[in-house]
Length: 336
Image (cartoon, rainbow, N blue to C red; front, side, top):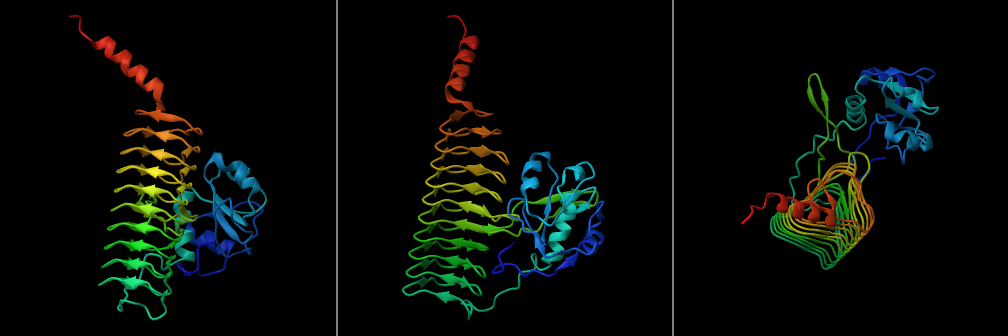
């Protein structure tokens, strides 16, 4: 369920009405009068929420889900456990339409006139820099410093003893204690989510948050997108260099290191104590185990086990990489 601090929900809606409005049809045996109150993700959905299911990889997870309904394809419909079913030719686009039905104002953020909203809470000893904007219902912890021209969006919570740099924007996020965010950082902006249709690329509303735990440091000009339905999570004590990109729904463990210009695509899961070198690129839905090390400029397209050290494009065990480099060097060396 999207956080009500950030999103205003409409509904509930009958399953049949949702089907009509998103261009889907009811699956066999589905109750047209079943009330759906919200969107959900497969892992956390409740009995009055609808989820998106369009990948065989989630069959087991869906079987264990408590969701009240799901939207899927003709091909996958037989895999759905007993619940309401909507069938669409493009379930991703249909789910985007459902998100817009439940949350119609997600793309229309009203401008804020006053610099400090009347219902914002600013803790004892906090300092607000010149030109900063603090949104409605935002909470700023004790002794936290907000830099000049920073924008703290509605509902954002920032803990105690934090340092928020100049020209940062924090939206749809909860920030722990003793967090340092350097100038120019953008947290909680839209994830890069689109459903391709014959009419073009349909924007998928992003309804998650960013959760930043205690003692995190985020370097200048990093960008961290909020989740689509679930949250983007940065674990305790993790440190980012400058110019790091983290996409929607990424979960990063504790005490990780990300060096400059590294990028993580959507829905990756990164364990504790992982070290990511400069200019590393990680494809979506990859899992990286605890203590893994990724050398600079590596491209990761597969899961990496705990403690693995990898290098190259695509990433491979680092000893294998250097053996290949040495072998190629011998093959290309000219006789003197």
